[in-house]
Length: 409
Image (cartoon, one colour):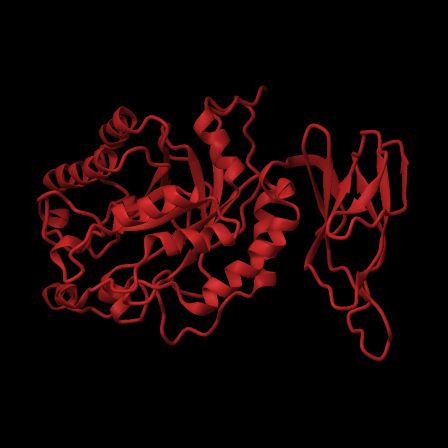
């Protein structure tokens, strides 16, 4: 059976490859993650008073977009409203539980969009469908859905073209009629080129759901290849992941992913053609923490050595051994080599294993040359039938790229 051709917005999305997720709201002031109100059973009227201290004094949409750009990220997905019901945008009179009615006194979504457009980053918006603040969510669900749709209409009509809308919360009422046809048709009316994503949660990784959905999600779990044969529509894949164990900032969470971990996760996503949406949790005042910004910048330097291999290349039938894999374009194959050792004086060099032959099967293209992209070193190779074997040389002392990329022409 045939694989459907992706529409233009999905093709653009897949070529972006790597994005920044931002979870930020009132909960950042408590520094215990984005579910703190619910998990700590804080009365909503008490929790909502955090709005009176929400200054956003360090929030800088341009600076955030610059951090994303330096990281090699092509889009930002911001929590315009999370489950606590507080909106970072001007809800145009729908509620006073929003940033313009706080001491911040500003539409923070508008500021981020301006920064994104200045830096060439595509703005996307997370929006909860679950709401702990609105009584109608439990008491009059039809009225709540009216409020939700009107909120999304504000996002769709107030800021020009946006890259996508990322919903989360339908899993909270699995038997309810969420009237998704109504919501998605409204989005298509105002934002026909926007990606529509609805997160299926930790327990339904890769589930497609409604036919209007443009990408499935893998929350905190590496994505598996999608079998698109016979599907009515080509659907993209995206993994969203935290840098620690919380989406919103956790002041006592020291368990952060390192740059090597980010690189490996990015590679595992691109191996199967998935995007990688990596989260940061800004401070109460709206600044991306120093460690997160620094780690992202370091990964951006790794991407900058071979951007075409990350953004342009697609999954390949060529198979490596172990963690090694291949991606390809029309005129080139990229080999992603893991667990490569270093070479150098035995008195200072550690991790010297992993050097030597690496094999790839299903390689039926002609081969003219193989080289490391980072230093342009030509590699010895043997190619017979559909088997390619390269002689993977080790890192020079002082170099370790975690995953090293070879270009085959």
